[in-house]
Structures are given as structure tokens and as C-alpha cells.
Length: 133
Image 1 (tube, rainbow, N blue to C red):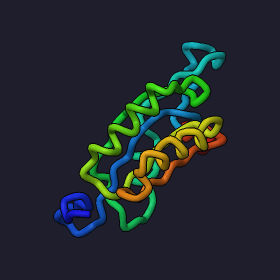
Image 2 (image 1 turned 135 degrees about the vertical axis):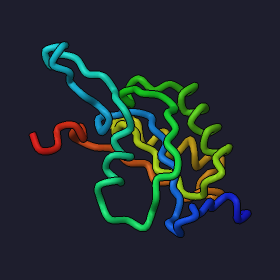
Image 3 (image 1 turned 30 degrees about the horizontal axis):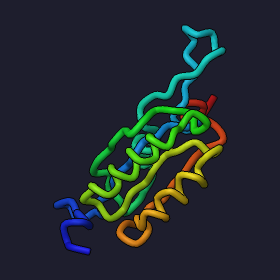
């Protein structure tokens, strides 16, 4: 691993790249739709990490897709893998729906990404937008 793959921002915090795939964590149920349909909004992980004390600084946010994981296709997983392979960051936090998270993790591991990057895939049972409601 080269030193550039572990990009450390100038303030000394550890850099982390957020990769959004969607899932419940990023869902919102807009009142314009009367709460009967959802849409995937901006990456909740960036908001969450800004509001907690952590050694990691969010240095980059990339959106691969904004889907419920049941709608993820093999093409989406290939695109995610390519984004991870091309990332200059060692630490990647991927937001993903919980229904097919295991399949995506297996896909990334089969391609050896668990050997070149430290990857965390996370999901949620409730949308971040529901916090405090």
C-alpha cells in the first residue's frame, strides 16, 4: 500500500471516503408523497459523522447509486467495485441496504478488495431522517 492510498488531510485527521449505495439509512418519506413512497436522499453517513467525535475526517463522498438494496443489480455491484478499486483512500465506508449487504460484501471480497482497502459496509433499520421524530 502506498502512502497516497491512505490520504491524510493536512489537519492530521485520518481521511475516509464515504460511498453511498442507498438503503434505509438514506431514505426519506416526503410529505408531498403523503408518506406512501420513499426516495433516497443525500448520504446520511456524512451528516452522522459530522455530528460525532471521531478521529476520521470525511474527505470524500461518492454516490454509486441511490437504491433500496433489493433493487441493486450485478451492474451496481460492479460499479461499486470499480469505485473502490479506483479510490485513493484506504478507508472506505459504504452505506447499503441490509437486505443484500452480504452479497455485496462477498462480491467485493471475491475481487480482493478486502486485501487492499479497509472497507466497512453499514446499513440501518430506520432512516437517519427519522432521528428525533
